[in-house]
Structures are given as structure tokens and as C-alpha cells.
Length: 261
Image (cartoon, rainbow, N blue to C red; front, side, top):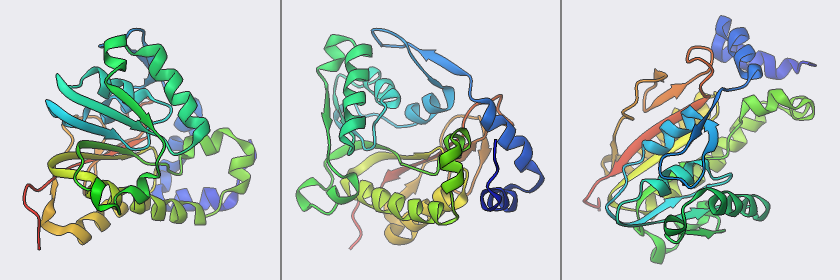
């Protein structure tokens, strides 16, 4: 595998002596699990993704949003655990990825559950700006597009094209998505922000902006799994120290039941 000196230098600065072992574990790939609880047929995914999806506190009734849902594994987990009066909107902006999402939902959900899941294709970063949509969802998962260093390492062209501008650009997009998600969330609702990025800039850095902007309306609600390492606002599961699980960053919040003036 060819190396990109800028990429190597960037992640060595972030992780120091740990980087070589972490990179090796990323290249080794993750051990998948066949998730089957409540499904018509199992779906294989990294167990860290199961932990992220299960972190969302689901309501007994109302509407749940998976804002960036493709390829669909986390949507399956949420759909299978929906309360009796709840429904799921699985959203994916990319038309091509949305087709894959629909195929996954059709293949793995039981018929009665599939009827409670709709698929949409709006830009989740823009929807929060519409007054009519604000406060619409009782729970919201934002598994945001991110640097996905594991995939960069797998693809020589992606690694060659990588520059330090990539995480900065993605952090701006993630912030647009997260700030919009918070507006879409109903007071008292649960919000999970997740990425498979390694950078603080795309993880706690984005969450910090949410706390700075919305202050006491954002109530931290630490994920209740023990895997991974605690960060300022969540947990990060890295494969070098978790038997190949991850990478996965998860931060969970509640929206205060009051609205600040």
C-alpha cells in the first residue's frame, strides 16, 4: 500500500505512538455480527454500529428520524425496537444510496414493521430551517458522513487524494446537519450524533458547537454502553483496543422540555 505523507503526519500528530497499531487494526477490518433481533432475516454489521443505534432513546409513540440512513443497518435496529405507537422515517439524500437503503429495509424487515418505516430523500442539513418541520421528531439519529479513515486506507485513490482539508470540510457539513437535527427534535426528545471518524474535529468538536449555540437546551445524556473510551461529550470505540470494533464515536443528548428565549 502506498502511503500519503500528509495523511500519515496528520494522524501521527493526533495519536502519537498509538497510530501505527490503530492503522494496522483499521486495515485488518472489523469482525461483523449477524444482527437478527426483530428482523425477518439477519443483517451483518459492526457491533459498534449496533451500540450506536441502540443508544437512541425511543419513544412509545411519535416519529423517529434516521437522518442519514444508508446503507440501513442502524435503521433496521431502530425499526425492530419501535414502540407500539411509533414510526420511523429513514432519510437518505443520495438517490443511489437511497435505493440501497430501500432494498435493505425490504429484505430484512418483517412486513408489519416495514409498514411503519417510510423512506425520504431530503437534505437533512436544510430541513431544520423550515419552521413547519421544527420539533417534528421525538427521537433522532444522526450518523453523519465523515472522514471514514478505514475506507480511505482501503482505497489507494482515496488515500492519494486525501488532504487535511477533508476533515475540516466534513466538520462544517456535520455541524450543518447537527444544528438542523436539533431544531427538528421535539422538546424532551433524544438525539444521538455518531460518526466513524477518528478526529476530535469531527466528533467532540462538532458537539461543542451545539452546546455553545443552544446552551441549556442541550442536556448531555452519556451513552450507556461500556465499550470504548470516554471523551468530553461521548464515547469513541477504536478497533485497536476493542477487539476490532469500530471506529465509532457516539454522543447522546436530550432536548430540554423548555425553550429558551
